[in-house]
Length: 109
Ligand SMILES: [Cu+2]
Image (cartoon, rainbow, N blue to C red; front, top):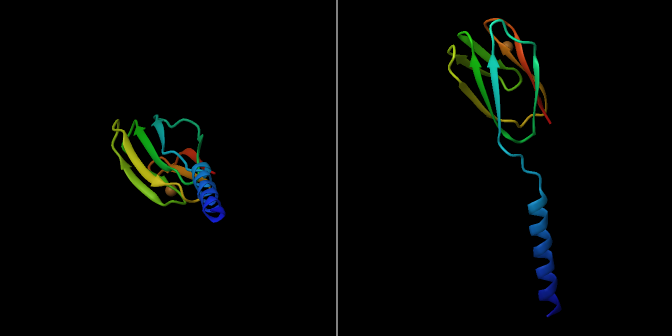
């Protein structure tokens, strides 16, 4: 009987640990790029989250998320999503490859 009780306790501890484990919620970051571009903004997202960068640019443009090495064409006025898993911590520039403006510093931590 004692053995059965111990087993139950161990299972409960396991469940509690699973519940309290950090799990990052998906994040959506909306960015409106003006012409000329505004100063660089700082955006923080939690490590491990699925991130959607929704970018609307005033001009036809091309976005480059450094580090993650994602490039995406943007059509003027059309919200465009860049979706990725934020699996690397650090600070990454989101840059225009048309105007060379740094739209955002994406901080993953
Ligand atoms: Cu670049």
